[in-house]
Length: 332
Image (cartoon, rainbow, N blue to C red; front, side):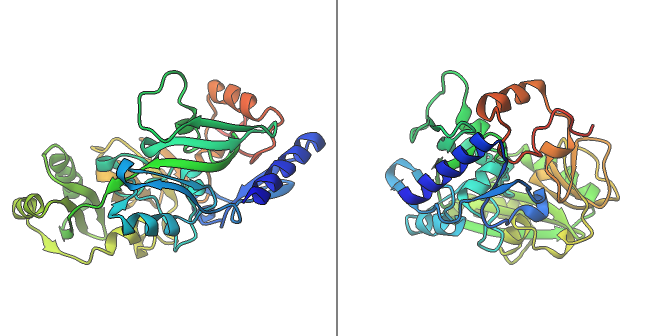
């Protein structure tokens, strides 16, 4: 993969010297959610792939940014492990670097942490064509600015990810999915109630008139929670379909992705509620919370904090990467 890395460095050097821009791309799996990127050239990371190191006993895996998440998950499953944040795979087209750059976590986020929480270290190239390394392969307290986690959710605006080290987790002994009939309002009330209890939840969502939940843990703990909550057992495939936006309710009728306080009362526009109430998929904008139109990035639709602009200047002074992101004149 040395040749692939050298090609990336050569492209960035040429763009820096010629004052042109570059789009960072994998398989484009997140374009329907975050929009297309536009630049004078494209850095294709799909050939920059492969698992570099994996230490099951230490719960750490390191892979190149273009490695498909499907390959990462397959390696982890062989050892009885998984990515706790369960980032979307989008029919096998999602890559590890794309998942970290987008910063999107799956339904387990409120219970097992975000993908950003799992990032231990990254290798990257900045806008000056300099290779850089932040963090490492050990989970520890960080002194100073935690740049590795800063890159999670930056969507390539600060540089090109070359590799990522992640903390992984054991696969729970038992995983079972349940549902019950519920209005959105009742569902939100139950979500807030259940998240305050010591239950082995790894998913809590509402859609199409039903409250859905997923339990994971030892068989004894899951059995006790099942008795406590009741409900009807359902096909566990609901959860990867929710994660990858494959449910019918998450189709063309969804216009906004909104992050709100979990206890926010649902609105008629809510077609799906995830993250135990904290994430709403809507057919119209919501006054409360941070809303973003589906198909557009939050980094193009919101005013940018001056600190982020200073960080952009430090990493990418020539504004080479994904130039429409982190703009000082972004729409209010």
